[in-house]
Length: 139
Image 1 (spheres, rainbow, N blue to C red):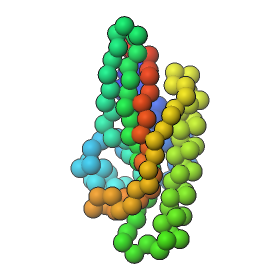
Image 2 (cartoon, helix red, strand yellow):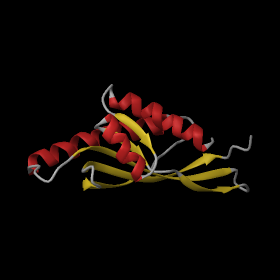
Image 3 (cartoon, rainbow, N blue to C red):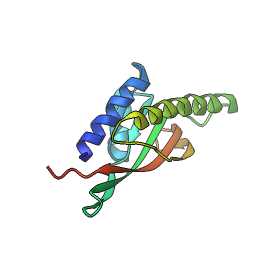
Image 4 (cartoon, one colour):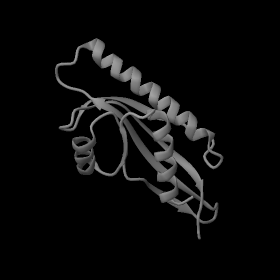
């Protein structure tokens, strides 16, 4: 699986779990800022994918960080903040379940963390990190 194929898979899953709301973004923080300014919230954001290839094992380990975000703010009450976390945790769980259902992916072991008012865009939600062992594409 190429990185492009992986990004296309992540985008397709995002479109399904977002249920017609929000958008999907791959890139760095600068392009994310422009994306949310232009398209709004919620957003499923994927940092640039990095990894390493093992030709001996014919696999590629892809390190992935995905944020599931809404717009936060300094004046959110504890109840509002918990509601955002709860919604985005549910979205991330649906996303990861669908990812595991893909035939080339298998089990996904995730580290996650709550995010509050990240960057000037006040991104609030949940960030997940994981590594996928993918079949190496040499075509």
